[in-house]
Image (cartoon, rainbow, N blue to C red; front, side):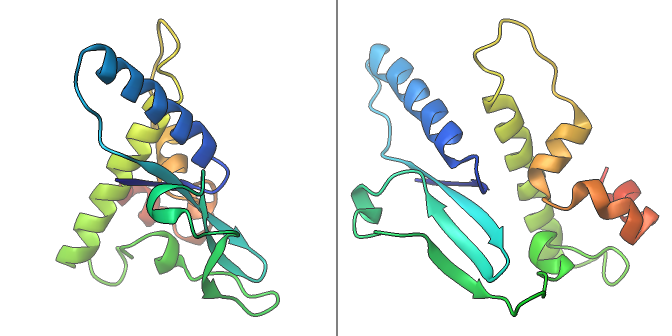
Length: 149
C-alpha cells in the first residue's frame, strides 16, 4: 500500500505507519506492506520521492520526475487541486478526487499528532496539508476557498 503525502512529509508518514504496524503486530494482526511517497514540486518538475527504496520500490535509486516544468513555469492550479469550482462543480471525478485529498489531508494532520495525549485538528492546517497552495487560494479567487471548506 502506498501513502502519497506532500513532499518532505514522506519520512514522517513512514514512521507513523511503522508505529501503527508495530501496534498491529502486538495485537497479533499482520499489517500490509507499505511505503510513503512524497510529491515534491521543484523548479524543473514534479517528483515522486519514496520514504525508502524497498519492496516494490527497491529499484529506485533517485527521485522520479513525473511532470516536466519549463524554467519559471509553475504547475497549473488543476494539478494541485483536482476541481476548479469556477469551471465545473458537477465534475464527478473532480469531486471524488477533491474529497479524497481532504480525507488524506485530515489523516496526514491526524497522523502527525498521534503521539500527543491531547490534540486538535485545525481546519486550516488540514486544508494546507491537502492542498499545497491552500494558503494563497484566496488571492486567486475568494469563492474557491469558501467552496472547499
